View (cartoon, rainbow, N blue to C red):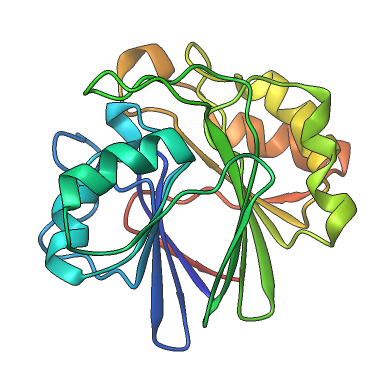
Length: 227
Protein backbone atom coordinates (compact mmCIF):
# COMPACT_ATOMS: atom_id res chain seq x y z
CA UNK A 1 0.00 0.00 0.00
CA UNK A 2 1.26 3.47 -0.89
CA UNK A 3 0.95 6.31 1.61
CA UNK A 4 1.42 9.68 -0.08
CA UNK A 5 1.84 12.74 2.13
CA UNK A 6 0.07 15.72 0.56
CA UNK A 7 1.02 18.24 3.24
CA UNK A 8 -0.19 19.25 6.72
CA UNK A 9 -2.42 16.32 7.85
CA UNK A 10 -3.57 15.21 4.40
CA UNK A 11 -2.68 11.76 3.13
CA UNK A 12 -3.64 9.67 0.13
CA UNK A 13 -3.75 5.91 0.80
CA UNK A 14 -3.59 3.88 -2.40
CA UNK A 15 -4.10 0.12 -2.69
CA UNK A 16 -5.20 -2.08 -5.56
CA UNK A 17 -6.69 0.77 -7.57
CA UNK A 18 -8.47 2.41 -4.62
CA UNK A 19 -7.56 5.84 -3.28
CA UNK A 20 -8.62 6.88 0.22
CA UNK A 21 -8.11 10.57 0.98
CA UNK A 22 -7.78 11.84 4.55
CA UNK A 23 -8.27 15.47 5.64
CA UNK A 24 -7.95 17.09 2.19
CA UNK A 25 -6.79 20.59 3.09
CA UNK A 26 -5.12 21.61 -0.18
CA UNK A 27 -6.48 25.00 -1.26
CA UNK A 28 -4.80 27.61 0.92
CA UNK A 29 -2.25 25.12 2.24
CA UNK A 30 1.23 26.55 1.61
CA UNK A 31 2.72 23.04 1.81
CA UNK A 32 0.15 21.32 -0.42
CA UNK A 33 1.68 18.82 -2.85
CA UNK A 34 -1.38 18.68 -5.11
CA UNK A 35 -4.30 20.78 -6.22
CA UNK A 36 -7.82 19.91 -5.15
CA UNK A 37 -8.93 19.57 -8.75
CA UNK A 38 -6.29 16.94 -9.48
CA UNK A 39 -6.47 14.45 -6.61
CA UNK A 40 -8.27 11.12 -6.95
CA UNK A 41 -10.62 9.84 -4.26
CA UNK A 42 -12.76 6.73 -3.83
CA UNK A 43 -13.50 7.78 -0.24
CA UNK A 44 -12.81 10.85 1.88
CA UNK A 45 -12.23 10.43 5.62
CA UNK A 46 -12.22 13.34 8.07
CA UNK A 47 -10.73 13.54 11.53
CA UNK A 48 -12.62 16.78 12.26
CA UNK A 49 -13.96 19.93 10.67
CA UNK A 50 -11.41 22.63 11.36
CA UNK A 51 -10.67 24.50 8.13
CA UNK A 52 -7.19 22.96 7.87
CA UNK A 53 -8.73 19.47 7.80
CA UNK A 54 -12.15 19.66 6.14
CA UNK A 55 -10.47 21.76 3.48
CA UNK A 56 -11.65 20.86 -0.04
CA UNK A 57 -13.87 17.95 1.00
CA UNK A 58 -17.07 19.22 -0.61
CA UNK A 59 -15.48 20.15 -3.94
CA UNK A 60 -13.54 16.88 -4.21
CA UNK A 61 -16.58 14.79 -3.25
CA UNK A 62 -18.73 16.55 -5.86
CA UNK A 63 -16.11 16.07 -8.55
CA UNK A 64 -15.25 12.43 -7.82
CA UNK A 65 -18.49 11.15 -6.31
CA UNK A 66 -16.48 9.82 -3.36
CA UNK A 67 -18.43 9.05 -0.18
CA UNK A 68 -17.41 10.99 2.91
CA UNK A 69 -16.99 9.73 6.48
CA UNK A 70 -17.24 12.29 9.29
CA UNK A 71 -18.45 12.32 12.87
CA UNK A 72 -22.21 12.64 13.09
CA UNK A 73 -22.68 16.40 13.64
CA UNK A 74 -20.16 17.30 10.95
CA UNK A 75 -21.68 14.69 8.65
CA UNK A 76 -25.05 16.44 8.93
CA UNK A 77 -23.47 19.70 7.78
CA UNK A 78 -21.74 17.96 4.87
CA UNK A 79 -24.97 16.23 3.87
CA UNK A 80 -26.61 19.64 3.51
CA UNK A 81 -23.68 20.93 1.46
CA UNK A 82 -23.60 17.88 -0.82
CA UNK A 83 -27.37 17.56 -1.22
CA UNK A 84 -28.32 14.51 -3.25
CA UNK A 85 -24.71 13.98 -4.30
CA UNK A 86 -22.13 11.65 -2.72
CA UNK A 87 -23.16 9.61 0.30
CA UNK A 88 -22.12 10.87 3.72
CA UNK A 89 -21.58 8.37 6.54
CA UNK A 90 -22.13 9.64 10.09
CA UNK A 91 -20.54 7.42 12.77
CA UNK A 92 -19.76 8.62 16.26
CA UNK A 93 -16.70 7.80 18.35
CA UNK A 94 -16.32 4.01 18.37
CA UNK A 95 -18.32 3.56 15.17
CA UNK A 96 -17.05 1.65 12.14
CA UNK A 97 -17.94 2.19 8.48
CA UNK A 98 -17.36 -0.71 6.07
CA UNK A 99 -16.51 -0.36 2.38
CA UNK A 100 -15.58 -2.93 -0.24
CA UNK A 101 -11.93 -1.84 0.16
CA UNK A 102 -11.85 -2.07 3.98
CA UNK A 103 -13.04 -0.20 7.07
CA UNK A 104 -12.58 2.99 9.06
CA UNK A 105 -13.24 3.28 12.80
CA UNK A 106 -13.44 6.52 14.78
CA UNK A 107 -11.43 6.76 18.00
CA UNK A 108 -11.11 9.60 20.52
CA UNK A 109 -8.74 12.52 19.94
CA UNK A 110 -8.18 15.16 22.62
CA UNK A 111 -8.74 18.45 20.80
CA UNK A 112 -11.47 21.01 20.06
CA UNK A 113 -13.56 21.27 16.91
CA UNK A 114 -15.99 23.73 15.38
CA UNK A 115 -16.40 23.78 11.60
CA UNK A 116 -16.03 27.00 9.58
CA UNK A 117 -19.84 27.04 9.36
CA UNK A 118 -20.09 26.92 13.14
CA UNK A 119 -20.96 23.25 13.75
CA UNK A 120 -19.47 22.04 17.06
CA UNK A 121 -18.42 18.41 17.09
CA UNK A 122 -15.96 15.96 18.61
CA UNK A 123 -12.64 15.43 16.86
CA UNK A 124 -11.55 11.86 16.11
CA UNK A 125 -8.71 9.60 15.20
CA UNK A 126 -9.16 7.13 12.35
CA UNK A 127 -8.17 3.47 12.34
CA UNK A 128 -8.18 2.56 8.66
CA UNK A 129 -7.95 -1.01 7.42
CA UNK A 130 -7.10 -1.24 3.74
CA UNK A 131 -5.57 -4.22 2.02
CA UNK A 132 -3.71 -6.12 4.71
CA UNK A 133 -2.58 -2.96 6.55
CA UNK A 134 -3.98 -1.12 9.54
CA UNK A 135 -3.23 2.62 9.58
CA UNK A 136 -3.93 4.88 12.57
CA UNK A 137 -4.31 8.58 11.77
CA UNK A 138 -4.31 10.17 15.22
CA UNK A 139 -6.00 13.34 14.00
CA UNK A 140 -5.27 16.50 15.95
CA UNK A 141 -4.65 15.46 19.52
CA UNK A 142 -2.79 16.18 22.70
CA UNK A 143 -0.94 13.38 24.43
CA UNK A 144 -3.35 11.27 26.48
CA UNK A 145 -3.29 7.72 27.71
CA UNK A 146 -6.11 6.39 25.53
CA UNK A 147 -3.81 6.57 22.52
CA UNK A 148 -2.70 3.14 23.72
CA UNK A 149 -6.14 1.59 23.15
CA UNK A 150 -6.48 1.22 19.35
CA UNK A 151 -3.74 -1.42 19.18
CA UNK A 152 -5.73 -3.56 21.61
CA UNK A 153 -8.04 -4.29 18.67
CA UNK A 154 -5.17 -5.38 16.43
CA UNK A 155 -1.63 -4.70 15.34
CA UNK A 156 -0.96 -1.21 13.90
CA UNK A 157 1.32 -1.08 10.90
CA UNK A 158 1.64 2.70 10.50
CA UNK A 159 0.67 5.71 12.63
CA UNK A 160 0.18 9.12 11.02
CA UNK A 161 1.02 11.39 13.93
CA UNK A 162 0.74 15.13 14.57
CA UNK A 163 3.95 16.57 16.01
CA UNK A 164 4.02 20.33 15.45
CA UNK A 165 2.90 21.51 18.87
CA UNK A 166 0.84 24.64 19.66
CA UNK A 167 -2.46 23.22 18.34
CA UNK A 168 -1.55 19.55 18.97
CA UNK A 169 1.05 17.64 20.91
CA UNK A 170 4.65 18.58 20.13
CA UNK A 171 7.51 16.32 19.12
CA UNK A 172 8.49 15.62 22.71
CA UNK A 173 5.02 14.37 23.67
CA UNK A 174 5.03 12.63 20.32
CA UNK A 175 7.85 10.38 21.51
CA UNK A 176 5.66 9.20 24.38
CA UNK A 177 2.74 8.82 21.99
CA UNK A 178 4.83 6.51 19.82
CA UNK A 179 5.35 4.25 22.83
CA UNK A 180 1.62 4.24 23.62
CA UNK A 181 0.46 3.72 20.03
CA UNK A 182 2.86 0.86 19.37
CA UNK A 183 2.83 1.07 15.56
CA UNK A 184 5.71 -0.41 13.59
CA UNK A 185 6.20 2.81 11.65
CA UNK A 186 5.33 6.45 12.33
CA UNK A 187 4.96 9.23 9.78
CA UNK A 188 4.89 12.71 11.38
CA UNK A 189 2.47 15.33 10.10
CA UNK A 190 0.79 18.60 11.10
CA UNK A 191 4.09 20.47 11.34
CA UNK A 192 5.91 23.26 9.44
CA UNK A 193 2.75 24.36 7.58
CA UNK A 194 2.59 27.65 9.49
CA UNK A 195 5.07 29.35 11.87
CA UNK A 196 3.35 28.28 15.14
CA UNK A 197 3.80 24.59 14.28
CA UNK A 198 7.36 24.61 12.97
CA UNK A 199 9.43 21.81 14.48
CA UNK A 200 12.44 19.57 13.90
CA UNK A 201 11.07 16.39 12.35
CA UNK A 202 14.50 14.80 12.12
CA UNK A 203 15.07 15.33 15.85
CA UNK A 204 11.70 13.68 16.48
CA UNK A 205 12.80 10.77 14.30
CA UNK A 206 16.06 10.43 16.17
CA UNK A 207 14.43 10.55 19.62
CA UNK A 208 11.78 7.94 18.74
CA UNK A 209 14.21 5.54 17.11
CA UNK A 210 16.81 5.89 19.87
CA UNK A 211 14.07 4.96 22.35
CA UNK A 212 13.25 1.92 20.22
CA UNK A 213 9.55 2.74 19.92
CA UNK A 214 9.10 2.74 16.13
CA UNK A 215 10.70 3.38 12.80
CA UNK A 216 10.00 6.99 11.81
CA UNK A 217 9.59 7.90 8.15
CA UNK A 218 9.81 11.65 7.51
CA UNK A 219 8.10 12.50 4.23
CA UNK A 220 8.28 15.80 2.42
CA UNK A 221 4.96 16.86 0.90
CA UNK A 222 4.48 14.86 -2.27
CA UNK A 223 6.62 11.92 -1.20
CA UNK A 224 5.26 8.39 -0.95
CA UNK A 225 6.01 5.57 1.49
CA UNK A 226 5.17 1.99 0.61
CA UNK A 227 4.05 0.06 3.67
